[in-house]
Length: 232
Length: 289
Image (cartoon, each protein chain N blue to C red):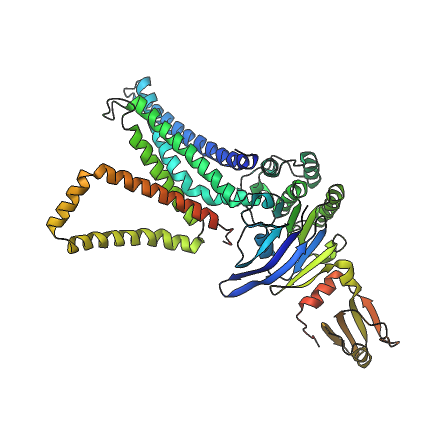
């Protein structure tokens, strides 16, 4: 990591740690309130149980935090970077490095949550399904990072238009597509199609997830290279 | 240090042309004034040079390198502007460390001395500073950052007279200690005139002046006297502004006066200062009768 990237990483990590501390603080406050409430009402309480609850809730909060953060980081990072003479390439590189760090942190938080709570989650072992969890985290973080970087290109008015119109349009297109499939193909063809799909569904899923991740990664790069200082 | 070349930059917002094929060069270690009326395109131009926004056409070159997305080139530029690019709750000392991490060799000692002079604490956040003090804090970073080209867009915004004096003093001090290129975009032309070596004047998206201040002022005149004599004396010259008061006429011209031109006794010729030259050049040749 060269010196210039380390400046950008320093900025992102400081922001991440601060926001993480806020998440921790909020969790701690709610946990303390819960304990106080239980003490006041003289409800049954065990220290192990309460600590487990805290770790589980904190883990969930980190998961939510880690997926949402990339949605809001792109433009502030770009603004900071461009103020200090960083190129778009280096800003994108730092953003990518931070995405990797967030993915690892979220995944570790998930693992921590599993370690203390896997039995209640119906798992045989704390590491059960961790591979799929990692894939889900990667897909989630990349998708929201792409949306965040895309929104960084838009001014306030277009943010509203795309933010509301985009999902509506996506649902409409998806609905129309499904209707078109059912109208175009007879039930036998559809049954055959889904039979092939279910036979190969893991392969299809892997393929789809891989293509989706690549697409999001490509979009993030494209959006960062087109980012400009907005006038709003 | 290499020359910075702005080559036929054009910028449009919708149908409105903000910059129209603007070209000029910035030499190393000189102080430039970038002057223009409101909306002339000064900030847009500085934003394009520092790659904050894209031009529709043209290129900005540092030496032989296009600066677009070029870390080696962009790492030699610093633009201080009104735009708030740091987070609101950033402390002043974090601005310093940001500049140190990005450019290296930030002059912490001088920056702290300047902050004391501006009566700002390093631990204060930008959000808690008034407009003037925010400008002072940003200037402190700009004058101590290790960059070869420093662009100051409205560097006196909100500064009181004392702080403006302090800024001009600090600018000359740092320039004397380590000469580098400064480009100052401001409307307080009289105040910066003494600092500037070269001046670039933008008018309606075009460069109308790009030359040393001394050369420009040497050919900038205000000619006044009885109307008929002034007309006779200025025959053939391009009159930029013209005012009549009773039978006395005052005109401004920015071009060399030929020595064979005979000056009538009752006509007076004075040199213009930079602000008057600027207003004459950018009034669009309006003849205010």
